[in-house]
Length: 216
Image (cartoon, rainbow, N blue to C red; front, side):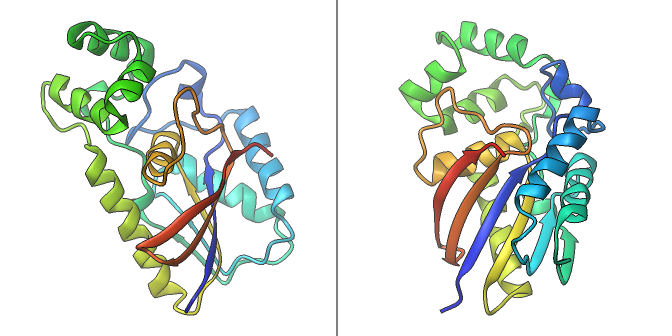
């Protein structure tokens, strides 16, 4: 059976990150610090012979991916983008201060904080409340994010049918959702910019976390 060792990396710090804004499908450039973070992660991963490097199709992930690749000793045979690894879609909340959005939601539904929602009802309920509170009701739900994740993993198996080392550059809320789905306690535990989460996989339906959110 094919075996995959996957390094799932959050993009480096962006302009909108510095203002703590919700940044889903909208985009912004990496800051100078974000570029340094990406390069440092690349330097720490430089000895790994990646067979495939794939990023979200959002620019901040592509920027991070390319800065990491520059540090690798062996250049990967396949470099791609895949929208399956795109950030969570926040709909009408895109670009708004995260603290303001969750304060409003928590007050409306009787919670103290986002972590309070997670502790009492689970992370999927956060996504449900956000969609309920979204005037367009288009904010992305937890099951849809996991479906995208599995689709992305399936795409990897089609690119590398015999397994191998894979680098995925994605986004904070997406990676946090994956971690929650795979059994990690995510309360007060958000992926750091350019942090690395290691996964082991034999099939898209058989994946586990080896290490979550290692800052390099």
